[in-house]
Length: 110
Length: 115
Image 1 (tube, each protein chain N blue to C red):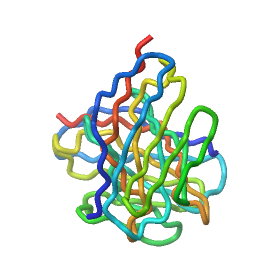
Image 2: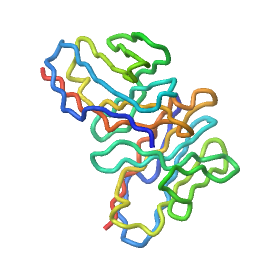
Image 3: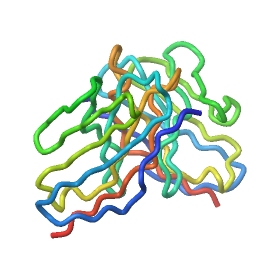
Image 4: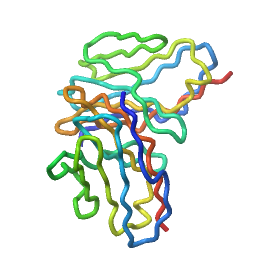
């Protein structure tokens, strides 16, 4: 089973700071990478995806990919209390459409 | 994105019984998936529900325990059979479109407790 690894957290950041969430994956053949956000008691929602090395920005969110290091990260600028959630990294692997990491719980402190 | 509903939203069931969970989408979608999320854990794919044919199960999941139906492009069911307390979990369906199956949209989930 290919693996997707994340620090479980919790990661606590003050309001307005940058939150940095990291993910490593074991399948060198993976070509696309996804970030899902899951609020407590809710289902996951897709917030970002990235296919190419480098950075991809969408509003306050930036996804960063380094395929050589098998590393993908999510930066959240100007963090808000409403960003407090669990962030799940997901990677296609073999015939499995998505393999999810265990998620990093983010807490933004007002 | 699609609007996805699941029924029931939660249930408490006795050991040895079975529960069928329904997933309804408001538009035709190519791919439908069933996941399990155990307490404090991440999502694990159970199977891909294929329209008009048998579901494709992931390693560790079998049809006898988790039979799946998908009679059309907007509806699927997952049955959890002969339940034990270890089956207590949240079960989620998700959908994806052809060529973009990794960009999945999830239903609200069914919280199952087995006593």
